[in-house]
Amino acid sequence: YPGAEAFVPPDATSREDLAEAARGCHGCDLYEQATQTVFGRGPTPARIMLVGEQPGDVEDKRGEPFVGPAGRLLDRALAEAGIDPASAYRTNAVKHFRWKPAPRGGTRRIGVTPDVRHINACRPWLIAELKVVKPDVIVTLGAIAGRSLLGPSFRATKARGTLIEYRPPDIPGMTALLVPTIHPSAVLRSPDRDAAYAGFVDDLRVAARVLA
Ligand code: URA
Ligand code: SF4
Image: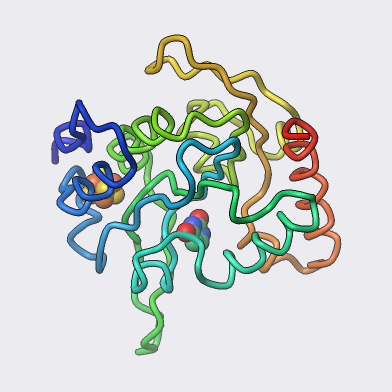
C-alpha cells in the first residue's frame, strides 16, 4: 500500500477534483472493507474546518461525513456555540470506514479505531483539503484528528479547549488557530452525557470567539 500521496492530484484546485480522485484511493488497506470513500464536505474556502476520526456506519453507506448520530449532535452543539453548521467544512482524518462485525452474529458493523499507519497513509488528503479550505480555525474532534495534524505526542485531554497556533509543516506559509476537543461520539457514550455535552459546547465556543 503506497499511501494516499500516490493518488492526490498535485494540481487539484477544488474540493471536487480531490473528492473525485479520492474515490479511487488504494493508499491503505481500508478501502477493501468499506463501501466508499467519504470525503470532506462544505464550503471552500471556509473559515472553520472540523476534523473527525473516520466515517461511521451511516457515513459509509451515505458517502457523506457526519450524517449519523454523532453528526446530529455536532450540528446541535455548533449552533449552540454560535457557529452556523452550514458554514463549516467537515472532514475526517481517515476517509474509509474501519469496522468489525458485531459479536454473536449481530449484523451491525462496529467501528474500529484506525491505526497510525492508516492515519499516516490518509494524511495527504487532509493536507490537500487544508489547501483548498484555507481555514482560520481548525477544530479537531478527538485524539485521532489531533494526532493526524499535531503528531503522535498530541494529548487530547490536556489540550482540549485551548488555542494552538498551527503551522502545517507540509504547507509553507499557512497559519491557522487549532482548537482540540473531544469527539461527539464520546459525548454520546459518556455516562454523564449532559456534562460531556456542555464541555463540548464550551470548547466550540473557543473556536466561535476566533470567528467573531
Ligand atoms: N465520526 C467521525 O469521526 N466522522 C464521521 O464522519 C462520523 C462519525
Ligand atoms: Fe486512501 Fe485514506 Fe481510504 Fe486509506 S483510508 S484507502 S489512504 S482514502
